[in-house]
Amino acid sequence: MSDPPIDVQLIGVRKTFGSVVAVDDVRLDIPRGTIFSLLGPSGCGKTTTLRLIAGFEQPDSGEVHIRGERVTAVPPYRRNFSMVFQSYALFPHLDVADNVAFGLRMRRVARNDRVRAVNDALELVKLTALADRYPRQLSGGQQQRVALARAIVVKPAVLLLDEPLGALDKMLREEMQIELRSLQQRLGITAVFVTHDQEEALTLSDCVAVMRNGVIEQMGAPREIYDRPRTQFVAGFLGASNFIDGIVVDRDGASAIVETAGGRVPVRTDSRVGERVRIAVRPERLRMVAQGGDGLPARIRDIVYRGPVTHFYLDSAAGALLSYQQNAGAHEWAVGTQVHCAWDIDSAVALEGEPS
Amino acid sequence: MAALFFIAPVLYLFWVSLHQPSQSELFGAALTLQNYASVLGDSFYLSIIRRTLGVAAVILAISLFIGYPVAYFVALLPPRKRMIAMLMLLFPLMVSNVVRAYGWVALLGRRGVVNSSLSGIGLIDAPLDLLYTTQAVVVGLMTILLPYMVISIANSLAALDRRYEEAAQSLGAGPVRTFLHVTLPLSTPGVASGTLLVLLLTLSAYVTITLLGGPRSKLLVSMIYDSVTAFQWPHAAALAFVLLVIALLLTALILALLRPGRVLGTGR
Image (cartoon, rainbow over all chains, first blue to last red):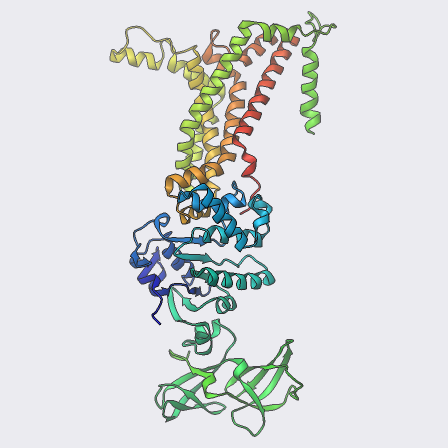
């Protein structure tokens, strides 16, 4: 099976605002039909990157390609994209149908085709009944759907979304995440969206780029960057994580034995004997076993019941630890109990960079 | 409040206008429509009304034609420079209307600056009759009223979310079409308020009209004053009421044409 063509490409793109480097030598290849997300905290450069793809910002250096065509110097209204803005930016002086039809009118689509396309788009987002309303008469969720319909009706090569679900409440947001994904898969549109919500990125995307200070720290499929974060920042940003420091004392093939303050643990790493490592383990992978087993000894400091899971806060010689246990049945743990914390060697990663 | 301070006096004005004039009282005893008949039936008054409407139309047209581009430019300035530009536009208004009108007299009079310079250069042999014409009234009013139009429109444009224009561009609209289909319609509230301000101020700008128009270029508001100085109160009241109705009709017309309501009321 051949690889799908690359719809969006950024090569060595750099953008500064005054003395601030917003985007620093970014390289992206986004294949056709995939959902790609730019994830990171405020000011990491994700929105600037999106706007560089759109053409609302010009890079100081580097190239932007859409569908193989070099568009770096091309203004936004001649690029093959459409965008859903964070505030939706629906035209207040036009009703829903005219809003959705705007892009088609600009492309001088004939009236009959235009009306049909608008109706199809409104049906896809389930807003046919509201075609005559004005944006100010709609709820936030409805406005978001209109913005989506307006963007997809022009059948763009790439759909850009700037924190599209940010203004919605939690339940509506989760509902729209699923709808967005199914819509995108149905239409096969290449989509790039920006978010600061790691859960959203993991839910929606085929590929996630985690950004910090204008640089992509790690890029990959959701499962890959969640299970195998490369840096402390990525590990911490995507969810809770345990961090355990130690020194490599022995090697055994591809894995090493690390001496931590609480005992020895195995981890897969290239680090050599004598080097310091920081190990990251997700709380749901940290098992607690009764004393006498393998793993780091620890004492249960706090137990927090959370419905489907229970959070266990532990103290060990290697530092504070966190463990999530599914509430599939009763357990005997109580505060103050001494336990051993262990994990599969595949559940842990050694992080890059100097342990701080 | 509105009823007390506005509607009640207007109703009283109408009431006064329905009476015969009187030598000693505000108005006589008998009710009559003679005041209205003499205004609306007399060709002299009708020509005054025509001239008034003509002046209003010309001023509106010019202030829109010049005012919108200036407002567009001002709206694009960064906030501090925009503030300075607006203050500069307001400078003429800081001088009293009377003083300013006399300034125009000094400029446009037979021995004024314009005539002296033109004859000094040798372009004209005899001084031009620039003053005491309808044109002088239009020019004089323009300098006062243009800032209102510019500031109204500039505020409206500056308050526009830039995202609307970006959205239009993301859908394929170039700069010209973005302006025609998005920016211009969304600036309608500013255009409407600017137009109404200019219109209503034109109809009521007594000082400038009288000082620059002289006895030959009178507008409706001047006739009201003339009637008052002749103690023809019911007649003046009738003229005032006619002016009010004209103003209201034109306001309704402007609002119906521009429809600012469909743009207002948006938070995003």
